[in-house]
Structure formats: structure tokens, C-alpha cells
Image 1 (cartoon, rainbow, N blue to C red):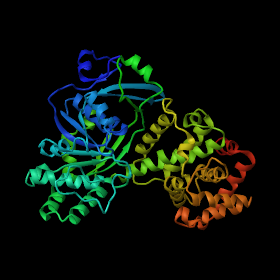
Image 2 (spheres, helix red, strand yellow; image 1 turned 90 degrees about the horizontal axis):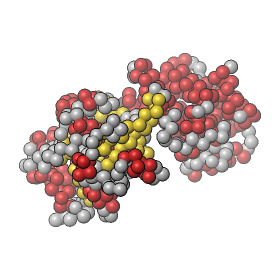
Image 3 (cartoon, rainbow, N blue to C red; image 1 turned 90 degrees about the vertical axis):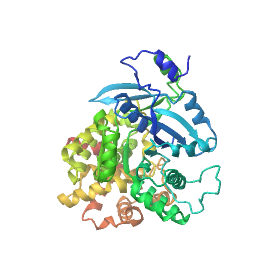
Image 4 (cartoon, rainbow, N blue to C red; image 1 turned 180 degrees about the vertical axis):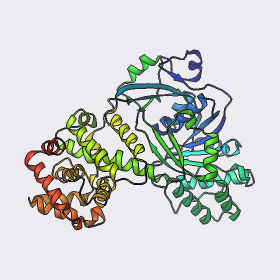
Length: 496
């Protein structure tokens, strides 16, 4: 079977089952991307391919493999001339949907160590304007010893140091031209990713004693956006490769699968927002991308509804014998539990976001959880559940109480399920958390356990026993779970 490449694509006829990106040979490289992994290829690169297909961008992405001296990834992508297939699968209005697209927006992939000169030469390209990255949460970090060497033949170690050196090269090549800076669109999963990257870049520039005029140029001519990304990308479908090869009619070593749903919030200033809207008109192409001055409401929406719904439900589902989110969603008892928690407790407690927007997002969450193409194990989501509960569910409990003077019952039950889960052998958390629960459960006193957990300020940053009556509510549900099982408690809450 032939391997996917542009020559093969030019011989194929487009069909309703397979979209093929624009095969224009003469596009300029306008985006430099750090990271060749599955997520960016099924997210930003996919979006840019859609823009090219609608004749709204006409630009290519040159990808940099930012870590590792092996060239496997770069070689695989270059062998396929940057082409790869994205298969998106999920539910829309509870109907299974599959979309397949060959992405052709990647021009080439550079390995920093083998292709260092070519990498540095990208700074000579006057058309290059955007820098995208996904170097993982550990990528945007400061390393004190990270300094460029004279006549460097390879880059500094950390991503921010690489950017500092690259920006200085760009500044020197174009003599500090105001229009030759970059718009940074980092996709790392940390809060204020762009602000953090800029802060570390400026720190390096000062510590390396680079010219003040260069530092001023960073401030004035480069834009560091903050982002929120949302799409589950499941990666290379190794168990389905043969089936995909037969249906597509070619071999694709870079095929990547993901869910249909996507959302991208880009927080930027007025100037950067205007340019992104003009140059990368995502919304005009029908993509769920929002340009905003403040991404906080979108972060809050995702953490409270999507992540919060996961955390409030999966521990109870595991206690009832289920293994995956899909199994949980097939049980009407748990979907009722989720609906009560999300629509009656989480959403009413949220301020600062339109209720219609929250409900629309919540509706999409049910389709995403029930996606038959994604096997999401409950124990994977349950890892480090104490810190997750603190960030995702506890704020909704506290906000609900402030508004109503009562506690949200589904979320409070989920707190009790958290405590019951940590009695079992499947709990997996930090050593101090595990030792705490082991010691408290050995006392065999649920009331004492609840009070000890609520009083643990290392868990919650506050003493939750100070909440009037909350310990009694949690204890009631915990004793019910221990006596009758979690399903009976949910049944009583949702249907009686």
C-alpha cells in the first residue's frame, strides 16, 4: 500500500468521506511551531488547513521538533511531505459523526540539532509572523544555567531560552523593524501561558545582558497571547491501523484521531486581536475560536462544568463497579446524577458567564462523555482526586452555599464518594494524601473521618468544618454509601 504524500493526493479524487487540504505548492511559511505532537497537529495545524482550504490564510506551518536529538518524528513527517490524516469522531445531538481530513498545511519539520542552521535561517523569512507552541506544562520554565554560547551550533535547553535567542537573531537580521516581531500563541496547559513565556524571555534577555533596544523591541513589537485549548486528541490509532488503511486506500504513519468537539480561546490585546482576526479569521471558517480580552470566563466554564463533571461523577461510578466514562454514560442513574449536578448546582453557582452559553457548553459535555470512540478509564481521571476536587468541585459547592444558604446535594454526595473512594485500594495520590486517608480509615469512624478531612487545610487551604452543617451533610451521604452502596444514594437523591 502506498504511503501518503502530496503526489499521491494529487492523483486522488476528493470524496464526501475524505476532505483534502489545499495542495498549493507556493504558500509562504507564516507560522513557526514548536512541537510536532498529536495535539497541535489535530488542533492548530488542522485549523490552519481549514483556513487554507477556504482561501482565508494561504500560509504554511514549519514545525520544529524542540527536544530530543533523534530524528524519527521529523523524518516521518518529511517522508510524507508534511501530510497526515486527522480523523475526528464523536456525537453531535447524540448522533455518531466521523470526519476525515488530510492536512496539508505543514511544509516541513526541522530537528533542532540536526537542522540547526535551517532552524536559525527561518528568522530570515519576512513572511513569518506567528509562533505556536505546545512544549507541555514543563516547557515554559526558567533554567538559570541556560545561556547561549558564542558561535552556537545548537540551541539553549529550555523553550523560553530558545525563544530569547531566536528573537535576538530576528532583531539583528531586520535591524529591529517594528513589523518583524511575532504573535505568540502558546498552547501549553498552564494559566497565563503567554504572560509566563514573556516574563521568562525578558528575564533571560536581561541576564544575558542583551541590548536595551532589543528588550524594548520585545515589549513593543511582539505579542504574547494567553490561550485556553479544548479538544481530546487520542493520537495514533494503533488498534485500527489496518482498518483505516483499507478505508483510506493508503498508509499513513502519522494518522491522528480525536473528538469532534473543539474550542480555542485566545486572550490578546487590541492590536494582536485585530491582526489575528484579519490574518487568521478562524470564525469566518466556522471554527469554534474566540478572541477575547479576558479568557477567565472560558477557563471557569471548562474547569467547573467539564472538569468538575468528571470529578463529581467518576469516583461514584467506580465505586458502583464501572470502568469507563462510556459505561457510566450508558447508565441512566449516572446521567441523572450528572444532570442534577451540572444544570441544578454548578451552572446556577457560576457568575460572569451567560447562562445560555453555560447550558450550551454543558450540552456538549454530555455528547463528549458519551463519545463511543473514546475509551476513557475512570481510574485515569481519578488520579490525584483530592487536588482535582479542590480546584474543580469545591468552588461550586462554596459558591452555591453563598448564593442559597444550603449545600448542593449532588456535589455534596460526590464529596462523600471521594472519601469512600480513598478507603479502597484503587486510590492513587501523593504519598501524604494516601497516608492521611489510610490512618483515618483505620479508626473506623466515618464521622471522625469526615471532620478530619474537612479540617485538613493542606487539602483545601481552609478549614471546611467552619461551614455550618456541611460536615453533617457529608457524613450522612458517606454513611449511606457505606451501608447501602453509592447507587442507592444516587437513586434516592435523583428519583425520590
